[in-house]
Length: 316
Image (cartoon, rainbow, N blue to C red; front, side):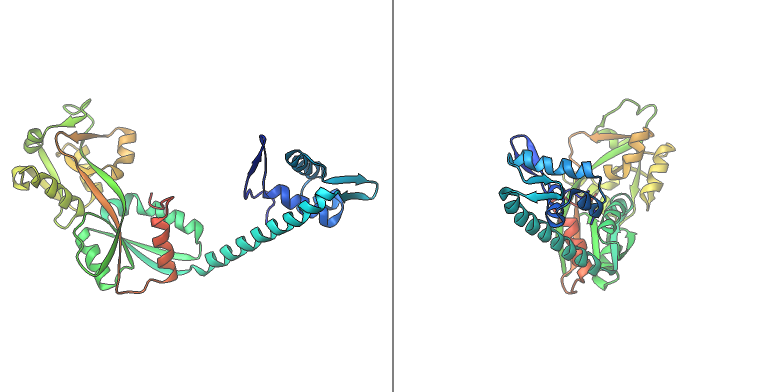
């Protein structure tokens, strides 16, 4: 293990110690020599001396006595040696056990995701997970909500990450995040400089909609229905099955649409598209993790579920 790894920090009157300090001290105590300890730890002797000095400053007591033959421990050094050995040993044991656990999380896992999050968020999560568990092999399938639901029910995928709430079946579902939907328009006249659009204006503008079975379309239908508007009241000019095709159509001036902000990071950064708020209506959709309660999850599946649900949140 590299001595450059920082494990813990303890504070005392503006100074701090970490695992490196204790590892260096334990090695000096074992060898009785600053130079030998430096050679064993691949450090310079001044670096070892500095680490020991840091400990002595922290505890405000001398730990070593320098002699012509090397170094000997003071009474305080004898006490610290025993604790340092225990702490370093416990940490090495912890790291070894966790490394064994990481190595045991292997095999294949098929993850299904709906189009928006499958194309713009889940790949990032899988990448981070692979850094933690390099032996794992994950396959991502992207489709609309209806297809992902059917695949999960039939065992074609192990875990699903979806938006929307229409997921009937023997599933366990956990909320991961909340995503905002916005009206998107090309960044040119008459939209340039706009930040919002009214419901009445939305109804008359050429509108591009996702295909039936899409979770985003479901959210749009339910949100509009809550204020008494049916999709038939919109000026729908084309129905498209992918997020990228809708963005391309909007940029080309075919019409406006409603889309997740997750899918617009690049276009909002390059300012090729505008994100407009829909006045008087909040457009949000929940993002869920789901899996079949009737199927036993592998160790890899459980690790991925825990990763996505962790407080630090593996979901990008």
